[in-house]
Length: 131
Image 1 (tube, rainbow, N blue to C red):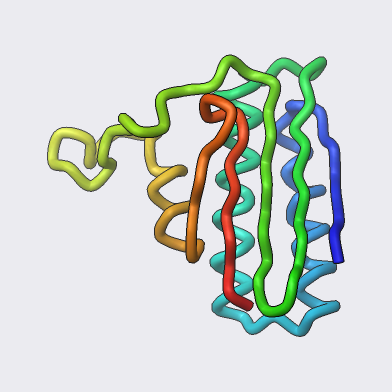
Image 2: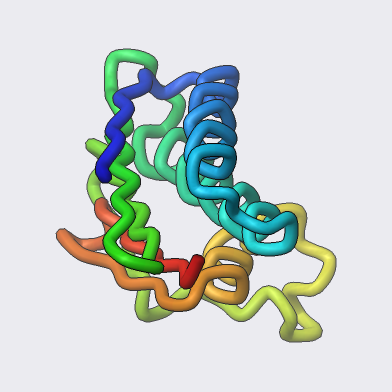
């Protein structure tokens, strides 16, 4: 099974991401804890793509693909931004960063998913979840 959505880079479109995750959760009877992890991680990925990748430019799109193969959900998020150096993201738990307002999205994505990979200079993130 694969579902795809394409949204313009507006924060209010995060509702569409939540809607599709709710659909998949109901269809595959995903447990509450795993659902919460998937929802938060996917909203972070989409928010990062909208805000940081596409710089809130509504003419740019975010493409999200959710694919279930066996007991594995793979979520791929692609933006149209310039990318970023995902290997050098500051640790939000470090004392010098603890009070920063931003900078926790990738940390949360990594903690809540079973794996997180970046491709195409950071324009594409791929998370997997054992469901």
